[in-house]
Amino acid sequence: METTNLPESEIHLKVPSETTYLDLIRMSVTKVAEDAGFSPEEVNDIAIAVDEACTNVIKHAYNQQTNQNIDVVLKVDYQKLTIIIVDRGQSFDPNAVPLPNMDQYIEELRVGGLGIYLMKTLMDEVDYEIEPGVQNRVKMVKYFMDDGKLKSVEH
Image (tube, rainbow, N blue to C red):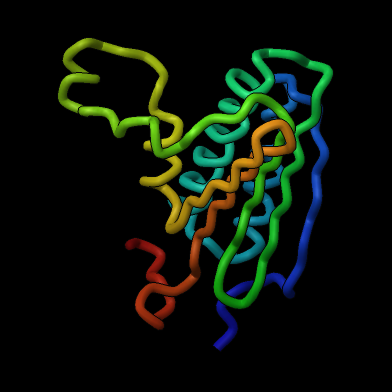
C-alpha cells in the first residue's frame, strides 16, 4: 500500500535569516506535507515545529542578524518526512534547555520560550547535531506509520 502521494524526493531551501521569509518556509513545508499525504492536523503540527525551529535560529543563533542564511532540507520517503534545518550561528546545548512547567507557564502568563518543547511534542523525532563554530543542525521527523500501521487521519 502506498503511504505517500509523493515519490521519494529531497527539496533544498536557502533562506535569508529574516522573519519575513518564515512565510515562505511555512508555505513550502505545508505544501510538501500535504502532498505527502499527512492529515490537516499533522500538516499544521509540522509547520508549527519548523516555524519554531527557524524562529529560534533567527532569534538565538543569529541574534536577529539578517545577513545570514538558514538551510532547510525536506526529504520525503515511503515512511516519513524528514526536515533538516542548518545554521552557522551561535551554538547551544539543547540538553541544557529545561522542559517548561506548563502549569507555572500558564499561571505566569508567560510568552515565548516553548520552541523546543513544541518541536518535541509535535514531531515524532527531534535530534540536534551541534558543531560549535561550524554549524548547528536540527533534524525533525514525522512518520506516516505508527507501529507498522498507516496512521489514521484522526489520530
